[in-house]
Length: 167
Image (cartoon, rainbow, N blue to C red; front, side, top):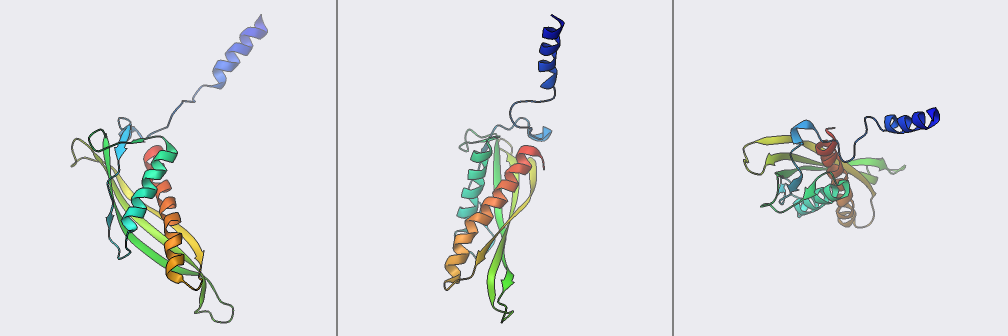
């Protein structure tokens, strides 16, 4: 009998401190649904805002802490801006150091989470960066275009992590 009581109490104590669901920051505890309108583009890269918006919305769906909703049903609105897209040399040719063989693109998204009922109330804000590397081939423009969604996905994951976990 003592063994049974000890076993039952051990089962209940072993789950102490755990909770189901996300561990949202206290300031966002009332937010359950978010709308993600098209981001603004502060760069000269065409369609960067569409790629960034899609990547961030996909990161919300994958994470599951918040649901994506239409503007009329949302608790909060995530406004964002593609701030920068930068390319830097990761690896050069052994014979010519000015000839790049591998590049890194780094993207930066500036964002604000606003209350859907009162757009002057900022619930959270920040910036998120993501990067991706790619090899230089005969068509550099295509290589850059193909690597851009991966960088935005990484920035989107960091943005959602900040909103879902607080860091």
